[in-house]
Image (cartoon, rainbow, N blue to C red; front, side, top):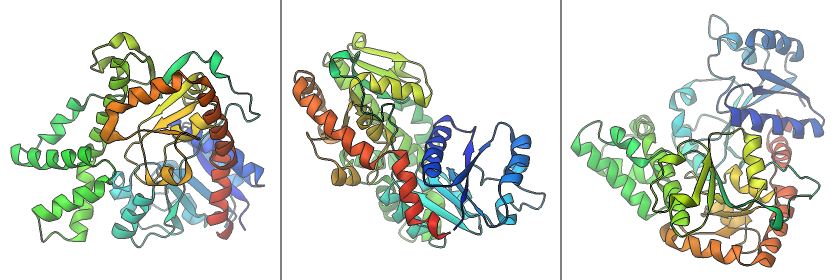
Length: 394
């Protein structure tokens, strides 16, 4: 069994934070670890070469960091450091695989793909069956209070917090209208169906519309075409973020948003909305730990989870979230989470007001959620799961 693990740091801040949390878990499991800082490639490449011998290490990366054609990790012939050292590459894709069609087409030795949503796994199996390691690993949470000393509700300054950026849906009109009226009608028909049926994975609906429009389309052509419509995924993400925050603010509920763009949110009662610019992952955790309720709007992971869910649970805040198949399996409404329905989002304010007026119920839910998260859904637990399902066998 390989006893060394390399993780990537210094890239996307969120992924850097995930890597550092996983590193703690790997160290607890007895692995030697090395964080490769992408901001200091020359220095870190030399240190990496000293750390990783031949066939004794594993790379665990998020979103292909370190597995792209980074010059410091590839020679003039395109061969990677990992190939030369016989180091397996385990990639955890925290976005849908249709964001990475070019990277998934590259043939690599000892490459394993990890999906954070089981629908993503199905997509990989359908369109990239040659890639091994079709594994499911949900995102994890991080607790600032592993000893259970999170703030009581009486000392929390925010009623509702949402951590994430906002972009007005009109921003995507240029993508929808880019090929003329006929294509715009086609794109909007997909968007409308997904808004009306938000439990459906977007690739399923996109594929159905493509096959209806082009009956002879091949699987290879579908794999090439679907990634050209990723703007539908981002449109839907911000469409429902807008609806959720807007309906709360307009119902007189104060919402504190952490992220860019919230000054652009259209609402009738902007006095109920406060916001601060984009913050680091630790800042977001601190805001969640100061909130009674932490709002989550799933980024179209219809059979997975977002780290906002487990971050809330692991910091004594109550997660109020829309559904996914996976969340419905592991969580119980009114016991360790509050679920709302995207198709009935107008009912969300009533759920929030009922909770805020019932402190005993909030304490009960928060305590149950905290125990469940600490026992099963932190990044430390994800490191253990990853080792058991794959790394111990490499």
